[in-house]
Every structure is written in structure tokens, then in C-alpha cells.
Length: 300
Length: 78
Image (cartoon, rainbow over all chains, first blue to last red; front, side):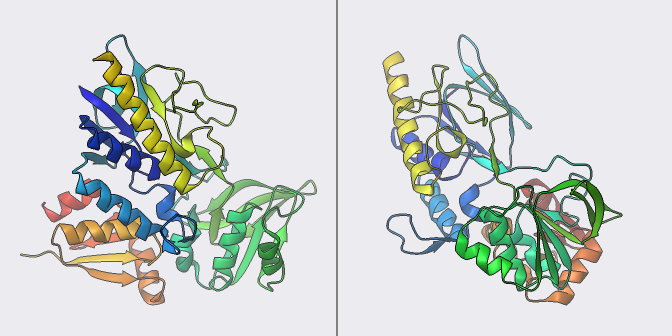
């Protein structure tokens, strides 16, 4: 049985792991990936000590720091359930089961899905959640971006230089991102903004060929070869159904990162902590580890 | 004999960076193909893998989509 398991290896999870191992706790980190959302960030200019750093570079720094302490990491493993019994906390993954005395959930957030027919089928076959990654594969093609906030606008600005034509399909009556970005996007000849428009389905054969939308009560099929889903984020908290969560699915924590279950702590973007920032997630991770350490010491 | 390994990637995709880090650590030589600057290679990747997402790793003709450490290890015989 471990002293502590950390779920997630973004800024919160990695920081928690570093603090835990420096306290000589018997530790295991389980994570689908390393870096989390930080790895997907373009440029970061507000992480103290770095005037400018890219997401992948900061992730590498985090990872080097974690390796310096030989933190045991199960990468590519997805947690499916968390259960607390009288003796221990059981973490079930798609590959195994682990017992621990304390747990820190730092599993972050993921892209929100559309939940329309064709979405799963055409993922990576024209439908993507990462414009930064896959954008270049759509050179000269007609594409649709779903969303109307900053991440949709950011995707549009990246694709303006690459795609042939861009439809922005926005469920709201107007775009809601930063004005500077809205002006740039609306000023581009290759962009058509479609407000108050719903997505009904993603269509295609082996790859995406179009998107079915509804606006002003009419259903239309728009021929596109690429679809970029940019409709925000949701917390990775489904596996923690026993822990109290708010209406967004975020895990409720107090200022010591305690959840409503003793021995289970949470940190970073998966929690209801105000403001989602890399530096806040890192700070929360350290706080959670220190609370877990104190919890364990008091029970020895 | 060393296997012929190709990585189709874009410079900005984090999983591409992870794949390449992993191969370097495992002392595997590979050919890095940047599909954001090489449109012919991008089309070749899409045609061969049926995927429009990076990374795609080609190990002696076996295609692995995404950073799937276990599959990559198996294909490399690590």
C-alpha cells in the first residue's frame, strides 16, 4: 500500500509529487499524460521566473524536476474509479488496482465534447480538439471551428494562414472572446461567422466531409474537411463520483485542499479553486501534498 | 538490425514532442518528418494511416497513431 497516490501529472500533480517525495512519502503518480493542459499551451508569459516559455518547454522543465527525484510514474494509464473503504483508498485504472493511504486528485480538465452523431467516429479523421497540433494537416481545405470564445478565435487565427475557408459555428448570438481577436477574425476574408447556429452531426465516409447545422430553424449541410471543436473545458472528475462536486463537475475543496472524504485531497483545475492558472495549479499541488503529509503524520 | 522509424509530426503538438523524447531516451534513431512544412509528407501520412492527427509513428511499415508507449515498445521489441 502506498502512502500517497497522485492522479494527474500537470502542474498540480507534478508539484504535489515533488513535495510528497521530498517528505519521503511512498508515492505513485498515475496519469494519462505529462503536462496536461500546460503541454497544449502556446506561449506562457505569466509563470514567475519565465518571461516567456512555451507549453512543451515548461512541461519538460516540470518533468526534469520530477525525474530528479525519481518519482514513480504510470504514464498512459487512465483512472476509472476511486473508492474509500475502512482500511484504505482504492484507485482502479484501465490497467490495474492500487491501494493507498492518501490520495490527491489533480486530473485537470479536458476539451468539452459536442455530443453529436459522428463526433467519436471521425475523431482524428478530420475532427480534432487541437488546432495547434493538427491545423497544418488542413492546408488549403475548408474547415469549421465550433465555438465562439477565445479558444475558438485562437484556432481561427492559427488557421487563417493555413485553411482555404473557415466557418465559425457559434451557438451564441455573437462572439464572446477578446475584442482584439474578434476584430482580426471578423476582418479576415477567409472567415465566415455563423452565430446562433447549432451543430447537429458530423458527416463523412472514411474522413470528415461535412457538418450538419441548424440556423434560423433550417437544417443545412456544410461541406468541410476539417472540424475543430473549441467549446471549452470540463473537469476530469467522472471517476471520483463519491467525492462532492459542484454543478460544473469540479471537486469541492477547502483552503487546505481537503475534499469531503478524509484522506482524499484535490488540487488544480479539477477543483473549484477560483482562477485556473498554471501557477495556481502548482501552488495548490504543493498545498495538497503538505496537507496529505500532515494527515498521515497525525495518524501514524 | 535497427528498425526503420519515422515520426510524422508538427512542431507544436505536445504528443509529438513526447514521442520524440521517448525515442531519444530509448536510443532509437528516427526520421522526423514535419508535416506542417512538408505538404507531400502530410498527404502521404493521411493516405497511409487514414488519420488526420499527429503524431503517427511508422516502425518498419507498422503505423501507430498517437503516443502509445506500449504499442511503440512492442513494435520496437523493447
